[in-house]
Length: 79
Image 1 (cartoon, rainbow, N blue to C red):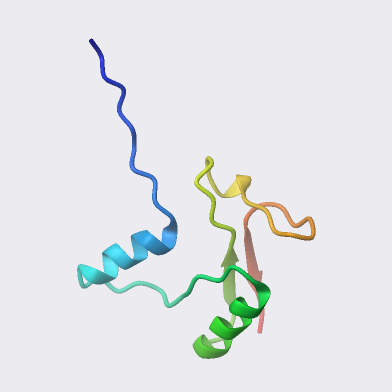
Image 2: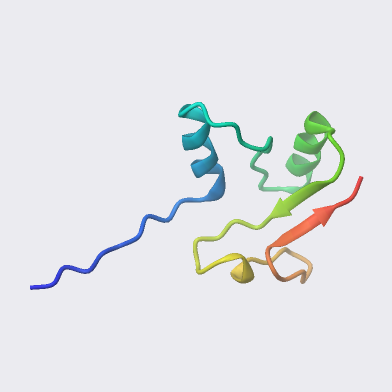
């Protein structure tokens, strides 16, 4: 009998932590669930333009969306 295989799906921030724990350099970032949390993270990073990503495990970045109607799951924020 054939047993179906399941690919491992993890959020990007979890995969970044795995890489960091292995000594691999990764971009700086953080996890925010509110606009206020995103602002706090941005003020700590203060390194120019940033990328905001809606993280979903539902088939890629195109499935993500932001409150307010922005679709696509990835937005560049210019400082």
